[in-house]
Amino acid sequence: MKEADFEINRDAVERYFRMGQTGMFLLILSMLGSPVILARIVNEGDYFAFIYVGIIPTLVYYFTFAGWLCSRQAKNLRYRLDGNVLRAEGGVFFLFRKSIPLERITDVALVQGPLLRFFGIWAMRIQTAGSAQCEATLYGVCEPEKVRELILSQRQGIYGNK
Image 1 (cartoon, rainbow, N blue to C red):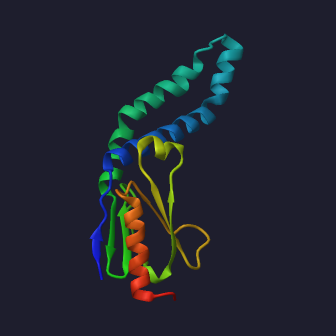
Image 2 (cartoon, rainbow, N blue to C red; image 1 turned 90 degrees about the vertical axis):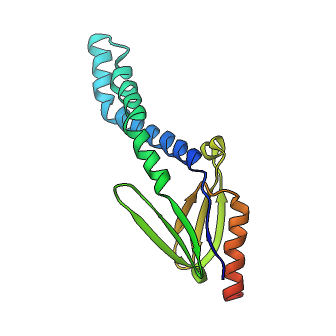
Image 3 (cartoon, helix red, strand yellow; image 1 turned 90 degrees about the horizontal axis):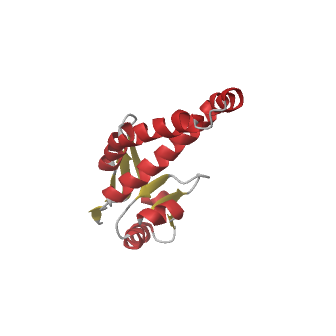
């Protein structure tokens, strides 16, 4: 049985998390601030309302709290193949530790959307029997094809075609 800690490209994962969270922050601010923006444009002709209701708070968030939060998220990620169990852990405020028995893993999918491709990383989705959604997503694993093959070959070696 092999035991392995998977190497993670933490810098790229941090930048990916920061971009995604900042986009969500801007989206939420825009949705909440839409009535304010529209009222200022209609009533006062203030066409720059979006800048100080959406853009400026987003930039403040990006360069302050998002930097700290995403750095901690990337630093706390750990992925490990431990005997017949795949372990994933991370989080900042809400910590998670997931143990996935290899016998339950049905597929390991490598996914790379446009934002992941921009940062040069992959998301590895772990599919398990008895679950409609993926059991875990591993972000930024270095050499994801080798890690995928390691997980599946170790599963095959232990459990065969079960």
